[in-house]
Image (cartoon, rainbow, N blue to C red; front, side, top):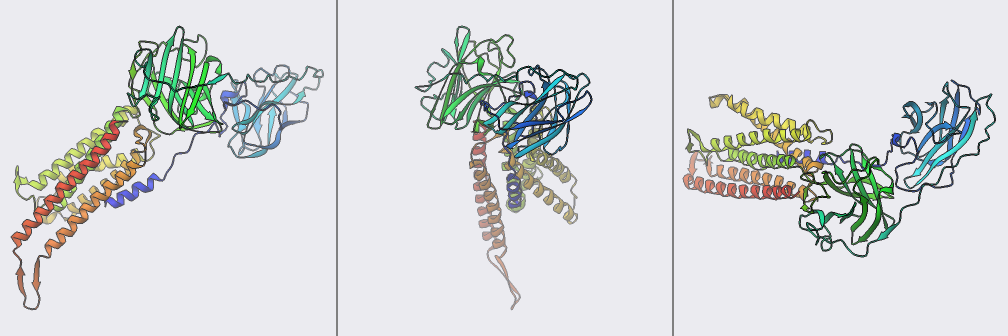
Length: 590
């Protein structure tokens, strides 16, 4: 039955988690005003796409057909502005012609005042209707931002001007979009950061807790050095994509002040950003950072910068002289686009003020409650349940002596199963306490957990109601076996899935192979005991021709069989404890 559980777990594990991209669904309302994509790149200066409008005159309340066309592109943002004030708010609203490729956005509190893409598929033409408002200006110009690919885009491409019939000819010189500021100067670090000043001059966050980035490639390192009214930040870690850290008021991602070092084209871009919920970070201006530098060597990325302790009036930048939880994360990047971090972020255990006295702090990639949840579930189902099943199935004749009024095997089985049920109930509530409710990001794991809990509670209740007479227990025995087997199968699947969840993301493939090894160990033990039981039963033979029953010295054979089973049980328990220690050790080091 364990093999069936493994099959279910392996089947569910093939479900994968997609990467995070920059708004492929066109929800770009944060760019309504400046129409600049949050792509951390400079826009191209010479547009290759055009906007046509027909007719070229309009009346308040009328409609104008607007067409965006040109070489293949993936994303766009289309707005109408007052031709004499292109920096103003969007004018009027739009009506879609094809809702499969375009969608309406609400910009400036005006519903449908902008149009964007609905998917990242290639397209060459978009048609929509623009609805002129009753208070429309005399002249309106359409503007569009077009994204060909992540690094290639054009901002505020101007279209033709449309005018009201009685308006004076539009003679204001065509406004041009001021080119964005160039990337700030970034220097190259000549040597690695060191941890020698941690605790004396530097506030340091390190994982492992005593590592030195100058000596260990795997060291994840973040330091803050106070310098008058500013703080110098150093960050180091193994990554070929990006490194990042964030300051947060709580342990949850969202409404945080973040900083990213992104590897692209043999260089590193250092970028401030802010996080809004569990979504892609929104890149901010470089203006708040100074003295930026970086270094790449042997798969290790290092970057540093300086920023002021406080930024009065600057949105999204937190004051550093306040206590925050500190997040450290790394992940993949391609063409400057960052993807979801490859494992759970390292989070400090408590809030810290990085401008206070320098200290060394550590963190964890898994919250304590989730680690306790995993440890209790492993203890319940990897040890208590597995041993309890083996004892009930194969050790009734071996442990038949009375213990507190019942057979010893029954007392052992009952004790282990009640322990497992109790631990399962305690472990079940811990994620709900941590999350404050149901998690929508845990896949099938919580659903399997609910089923496992239900069966773990029903089994002892059913056992308490078992018939007193052996002859009436056939239905009970089959029901008890079926429910127990189903619970074990779902528990195995839940354990396989739980190991890859972000909250307790055990790194590497070893965990999967180790769990497969545990399942094989349990199945192998059951097969061994099943074969041994069968061979022991053949010790009694009947000679059909003489109908004389010949029995070997059965007491001796039985004693040998019991000794073998006890040895197998001892080895099995030792093996289970070894598997348990491996997983508990890994969980404790998260």
